[in-house]
Image 1 (spheres, helix red, strand yellow):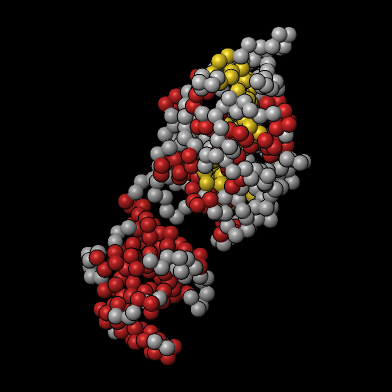
Image 2 (cartoon, rainbow, N blue to C red):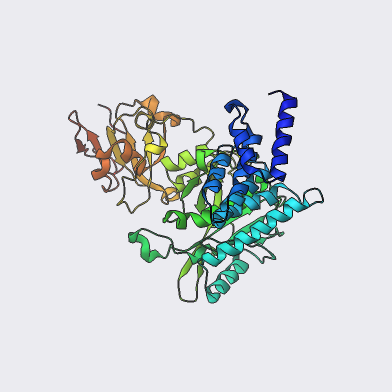
Length: 480
């Protein structure tokens, strides 16, 4: 149809809508050729299905949701699309799922005379959803005594807060965000969750006695950050505080120091940054004791700082360790400051462009009984070319590296001196990563400092005796 015919068609649909002739709208849209069933008319047909639904009738509402989901990409910035999704979910008694859609409507439009009625309708539905959902769900919460202890801890170590972003709806845990304003001593915002630690995370059995099952999250933002702005360029750090706070309960897992989480699809968090992952660290710029709050019963709530990472830094950390990445931050030029978070900070691993033989998703947890530090050195003959370990040795780490360096060095055994002298041909990696490349090294890893092993032509490792007159540390592999 041409533009005149299309306008007349849309006017007819609107007339039928005013006359409650919803089936006529559905029939007319379904009769259109598929290539003329565009975003606008599909949205009107979804609205007709919603209005057609009688009391207790679910099929029209479910069909409306299917139609809307088919145009989800086009509807991201359309308040009408979000309102229709929320409407259908609400009348399907799925109030908790409807809440973010009505909240998005309020974020996309303003409460001004032109949109006041629409805004008021969305707000009314949002309040209904919140009230109905809360009547069905009892989220995990601190006891009054626990909450007082956590509040006192935040005030003591992070600063007094006079603003709190309260949750309207809490499906699992009640997570508020305390906002500590910049001060002369700490010229940045500090945002701290309050409520996440009410949930006990599912930590592995072997560390259950270490009291790591309760945690709150925090992040530090520049003093000019637009706190409270709902645009994603400014809101994503708050969104990720809530994501990380809820992730352990949602996945029945746990989060702790050095853990990393990627943004789905490894896409940047927002248009103003290329950061796309999160690593958890202890609060680095605060007084000793800021990382742990002791509750009245002696239980402990840990506090972890969110450190946003670039994709290259995520890859580097996975192949090495959190400590190795921290060392990289400290040794990059004049050092890279992580507090406060800056969306355009330098990338510590911009030169980390190697095409590894194994992809990140292929790395499995093989080294499960290792209790020591996890960093090691390995050459590209293994990590890039995919060769097996031919020669390995363990040297005693320097005092500056004992917190990450296991002392292990892995080579394919065929590297010459020029290759070994070029630092670009090797890197710092996680022992578990090397085990994924060659599981034959597993029985060797508990060998003492000074041990060295060479693989023979049959693939069997043999202990290499130290050279006469040498110390108990092998500095480089012997050449055959």
